[in-house]
Image 1 (tube, one colour):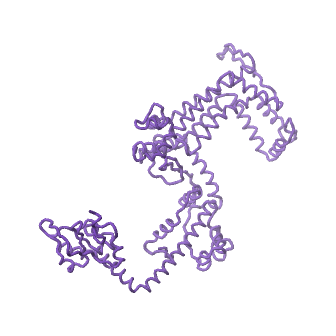
Image 2 (image 1 turned 60 degrees about the vertical axis):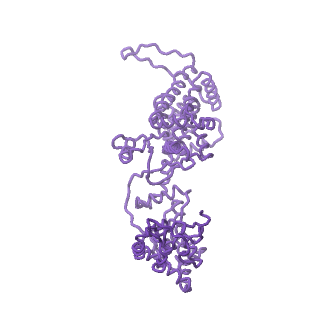
Length: 591
């Protein structure tokens, strides 16, 4: 039936009203057609002459407004543009009301103006062409300014100079860069060198504030997590270190955000948790504590004097087999030698091997691609690796390796320290432990306690974030006991495999709730490494000469500098810049 509809009929989808108008067609006003009664009334052909804009649809048996269909206004009546009018009893009354409404008048004015400009459009066309060329050049100039600003922001250099007047020999990086670009850019030379247009200026205030770096973690349509330096919006998770001001249950940052948004789940940063485990290790095991204490003392001693550091670097770079600090009258050589002897007694090689396992976990925890499931699995693998190390065979292997290092560097072999006996009056008197040899002593008092403390600490501290909601989602998406009813033979027991399967088969629409929960699960942050890395930019952006920079300006420049890899839509920026002056308008015509 739709194929028999005339092309000019308002119900036809073949051509739009504007297309017909361009082809010099007017309202569709058929006469020799069948008019069907609706509620006992018929459409009257006399209305064509009384209301010239009326057109009739034989297929819908309804009346439309040709003018409003050609140039529909914002407040156009849908009855006369899309649906169609059929209440013939009130035909003249409704037609008259429509003809007097502002929407119809606006459409009729547009139609008449277009018809007039089509016949007598030479001046108007020239004006429009000149206006279009002017807008194109103005927008290109603003785009050049934005590229220059973006270059300065992404390089972390100051934009304004101390003196930006015409007499100044150095107007700052931004203006000087514009002058340089003007030699090769005709647009900048025309607008800036010849006209000297000043676009932006703002005031500054002194700020000695503690800066907070806020990153937003989100998951895209392919379930890939991202972390970007942006403002807060639709927060579902928050991650901080263990400071009381951040994680406090009553007045901490996480509790205050939860007051505004109860869905913002708090997670203690896993990288900071691992750091706490290593701090406990360095404090609780006496040999490790003494080793790091000696290294710290030696480092402070050498760094405290430029001369000591120069001598140390010279000895370090020498090819001598036995590298010792030469005797100088003004250097406490005895102190250095004592510290070096203390280090020789410590089993640094064993500590290095064990801490190397945690370093793998440490580097893994700093990735923005992590999620609760991968972090938990990686922590379990690290614990299993540490448990595998806790055996006699592994200790014997490391012991032989340590002795080889001592022999190669001509270091004294380790010895059992003298055991002090506690007097009976102080609760002593117990028998001292008997060790078979030095190797047995270090295994019992150093190797096994080191591993036991590290295993227990990681197990206990990492369970801090085992919240009910996260554990429930973990059970749904990761545990091997879970199977999806329809796809149990297709999806393997791995979160990454399920994500790949969903992306390849485009199943988000079929499993909407499953996809939403997966998006939230992947969005929950696990570390604040991105924030820590962003702090390095603060020293470059807020230098000694830029201390008076305002907080709003600092945040904006930091966003451009930190997120330098993100593309900027210059057209959207220009449009927003133009809309920023709705009353007085811009000196440059941008639209």
